[in-house]
Length: 416
Picture 1 (tube, rainbow, N blue to C red):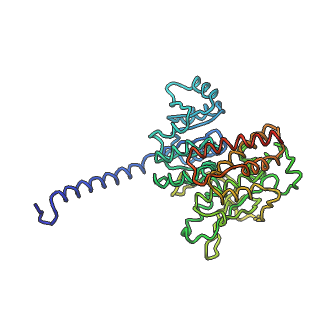
Picture 2 (picture 1 turned 60 degrees about the vertical axis):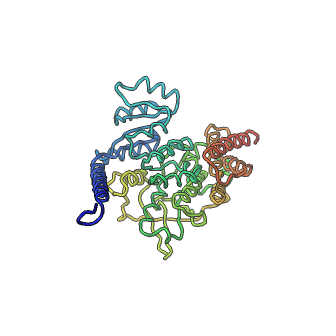
């Protein structure tokens, strides 16, 4: 049977049904724009988490704290729960979990011992992953697998498992929005051109507390020395990584995965003022940079509101006042972490997991006061040299490499 306008009745019914589906999608999409964005903050008691909550306070009712997670700072987490009233909370330290469960109001949020399980909830739209180290990896994978927008401040996720995480995000059509100030700067500058037009990325580094220190002072630096960062206020692990410059090495590897570039197209420069957060050089010679005072609220807000820009409560540059910007190359002799990380980025495979795990172990032992500062880089270098690289690892392979590297680094430190 043919209709007067051509085509079968079945075709017209199918077209009508398709039209209804498309109209429904448009209506649901419009409704979604009217609802608040429901945000899970993983690592809410850390410096990134605290700044993120401040940003959400500033942004107002369009942004809602749906979930929080912490490790051992139970008092601080309980204060956040009382203020923001999230629907779910994850606590990963057993003793803190028991304390919070005892003190939670009733009715209160649903309590989880596992961040990944909480992240899979349907009442979360965006996950801000700000847990330091490989501990945040399972929750990051859970966010991607369940189609959440991922605002990533956990660089270790890509360093350890970028070869798995990036393809997974593409399959699930999940955007990964960088929260690190350097990668946010690159992401913003890249909006001005096409990926094929990029000649190189330039990551800026403050140089940490030892940027002008002689090698012998760096070798025997104390924990107090390492924690005296000249421009940023961060957690102890990240601050120590900044002092060794492993933080910048991790960021180099992260940039390779985020922006699909080889390490040969990524340079690192020391920029003591921490105003230029990174740069992109295009093939026509133009270099585009993002500038702002050192304030993590700036990249956090850009990730939460992207692709919108909204007025922020972060510090602003006063370009009417005189100031200078300085850049110089890092010294690989005093900061061997940079060459170690570049070699890891080139070779790939399980080496990212090995470097990250060895560094985490060495930093933990340094923090306890048992080794000199210079031992951190030597332990990481030794562990990498002992490792038999797997070129195309599974997630289980990466986790086994992580465990092996921790044991190997700790053994090296005991023996030396």
